[in-house]
Image (tube, rainbow, N blue to C red; front, side, top):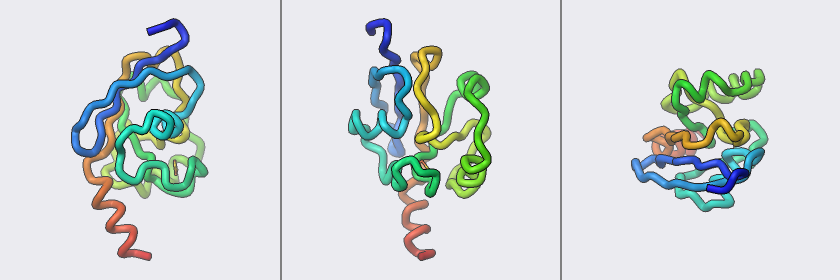
Length: 121
Ligand code: FES
């Protein structure tokens, strides 16, 4: 890909892999929206840290290089279904050149999480 493009692989809730090439600096939420990546119920709060539907699981080496989380992200992530050691909220992560080639994984049970939160309302 051209110099200013970063390649990212998404694996959605059904295990379907999508590869996309994006500009540095955009959030992963924006990538999912603009590239129309098929992820159930992703980004329900438009990146305002009021949901956990943008939960993504990162590769260990990528996760460790990312900017630390702000408290609000930690709190919201605590509510995310299927939380892992390398989970982040996609709306809080901006694409950077060094992330080129990374794979981000959608937790398998986003559907169930959505159903559970509907029941709780
Ligand atoms: Fe809601 Fe990221 S889109 S917290």
